[in-house]
Amino acid sequence: MAIEKERERMPREIDMEAMNAKIMDIKAAATELHQMADDFPAIARNSARILSSTKMLEISLSDIVHLEAEQHHPWTLLRE
Image (tube, rainbow, N blue to C red; front, top):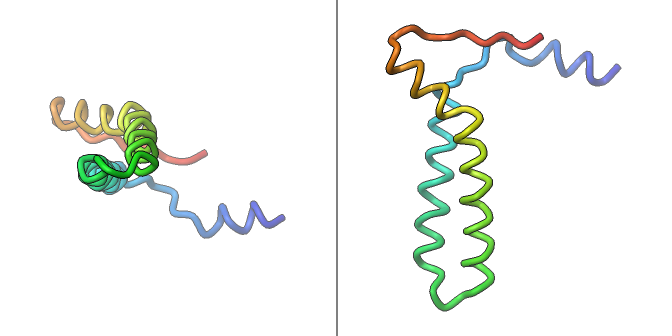
C-alpha cells in the first residue's frame, strides 16, 4: 500500500539531464576529496570507492545523455 502511494507522488518523466548533472557533481567532489587525502588513508580508500560507484552511475546514465546530445534528439523515459 505504501509503495502505491509513493508511486503516485513520483513524477512520471525522468529528467536525465538533471540526474547527469548531479552525477558529475558527485564525481567532481569525490575527485577533489581523493586528491586531498594523501595523509588520510581511510578517506583515500573511501573516496576511491565513491569514484568507482560514480563510474557505474555514469555508465548507466551519463553515456545515454551524451549519445542523446550527439544525435540531437531527446529521449523521454517514462516509468512503468
